Image (cartoon, rainbow, N blue to C red; front, side, top):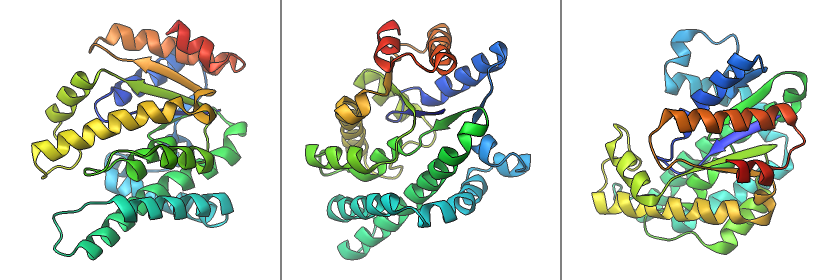
Length: 260
């Protein structure tokens, strides 16, 4: 089973991921983070360096991505949307700015799609795989921009084309909480931009994820977790419910979402 944790910056995804893996360990449930599952041989020094770890994942997923027609169609759609809506004021020329932005986003998509393809082939022969910000989270790269709000037709196309995990855990929080948590981070998105631009970007992301997860294609396999407070007890409760879903396998996402 492939379980993806997705949501806007500041929603609490990383904390929930740690709690899910801890809960699996305590209950003896076979589970692993995606990078541990795909790259068990990777030295610790590389795991601690996000750039080197991402490079290893790029190499691991390259052949998978290039051979899948559906992924190429999705990438073409993603690049078209990014080219249309991207805004990089740090560069001097608008045309070059669009290219740089598209290539940068494409690399992120390439890594995540390659990882998903490898997981889809191998996950049936191993533990449940917990993916932090996988293919569904790519919507953040494709559909969220500073100067344009997400468009319903783009969200529908994204849901039609994106490679799907078995279960999506949508982590969300009230917008005020998301803004406060994100601005408190050392590495907020769009670092170097004005606060007004960053806030607009975060608001667009928060809106987009709510719309995305309401799409019929995704809602059938989505479990929504609302993290209103920074309370580890609540995260542990959420983690128990998610692991119940992993163990049961047959329970519907809507049942679990209601329980949470």
